[in-house]
Image (cartoon, rainbow, N blue to C red; front, side, top):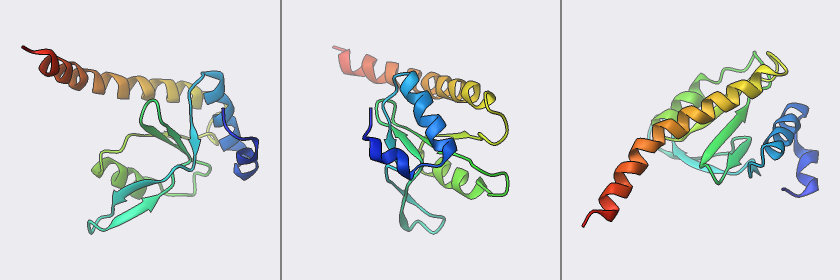
Length: 124
């Protein structure tokens, strides 16, 4: 799906996620930038690990329990950016189940809004 040279820039955990996304036939872009506002409403450019363009969802591969992701989570949430956090260091298989569960949550949250837009678009 993606150029071979991108894998050389990835950590082992990121490579595992890329391979899993490929297995699920989910298109992805590595370190695709996203614009958001920080706590002072200043524009910022961040690069989450993966962007899933067909789903408009980002994925952060959390590589260490020593890094505090709460600030990032809060900023993404405040900017209405959907992000799935995967903690590969916790369990080698559980993260895949977590990914699928979070993906379904985002889909279910979007469905009522999409249905409402479609109803309004086709209303005569």
